[in-house]
Image (cartoon, rainbow, N blue to C red; front, side, top):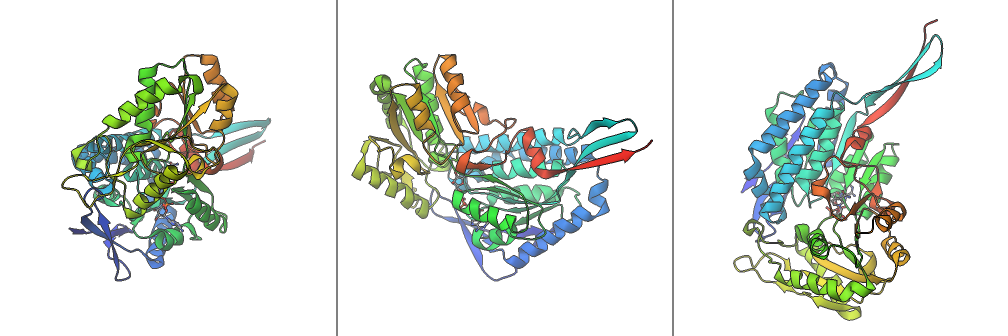
Length: 480
Ligand code: NAD
């Protein structure tokens, strides 16, 4: 079992207090490592190091294309440790190994994408009058804070850290206390490079301690937060108290809208995959199935049949789905299923699963819930488990109303062969991403991603994310 350390100012450091946090393998409940329980003092040190590095001449003198090369080097390291990282992610998060590989490949692509972008973030000139040159430059914001959730740690750290470094910022990461393992390996990769001390820092610990100290720190210049709505609001408010901008990537209750004229086989597969990925512990999970009423029976039979064939197992067994992260999350999922048993109809699943040899893990059957009242918590709140709730609509307007009927607006799937209906809905649904006849577009490193409504604001991924980490400066020069 490893006793991991934090990384501050180019050095591995012990915690500033005596206590540590156990990191568990969700598949079998065994402790795999300990991390320091980072304190406000640790956060202060990390932010100060990042500030000093940002202000220093060494980092400033590194050319834009050289920052890109740093990111390419990290991508190479991730790729050359592909097996190790995929196994680590599967062990730490409990996700099926093949999904661990997908995460590692996405992380590699983030570092390559933003590595290539580093010397292409350009400014502008604005025509005013003869003798006056007006130009706009995009400067780095400074010290960027990155607070990440437990469900996709490597991917989520990679997407924001790569964009921040590409644009010339320095970084303080607060990893998720439950799943810090791949973040720690990534930190080791940064340590192996010859970077100026303080450019990359990694603090571990609890959200209400290290996380709160970081988001409320007066010397950070931007915070990227990915996690739940409640915490996102707290982080945004803490940052706002220092007039620091935030990018908030929060939860979802995303719908798949299925019309009778869809390609049934592809749609079944898309709907099923979108909810079982990472055992439903995904912000963009296709948690609600909205199906055309006349098509419900035929479609649902196929989805139910597919659900019954899904295999549950330990992460490294690489079945269709792994365990729920921990007992707390498991209790939440089971409480929502119990609510469904009281007020709706559990069509498939609805119970926990014992996986032989992994009795300490918290496994849940893939579950389909029908007959849900549209105002129920089951219809409105994240369950964050492999649980699909089913609703029907009679026409396009009702589908639209249902799609927009939660506080969230992260992702929507539309399944139909009628392109007019698909584009009409795409234009009317409050959702940061819309997928027509697919769901996820293979990970979408290049595509801006983020929420409407309580799913957050600001965009990550794609070119857009680079602008989170830059601030515009306008310069007007009178030369005549
Ligand atoms: P969470 O909000 O509990 O925690 C997220 C991070 O915030 C963790 O690192 C935690 O330590 C930290 N934190 C907790 N309290 C804090 C505080 N007071 N101040 C600062 N930091 C604090 O979320 P979670 O349970 O880890 O993740 C699941 C949630 O994340 C779900 O709601 C999911 O939808 C969402 N999510 C969103 C996206 C996206 O891109 N939109 C991606 C993945 C997960």
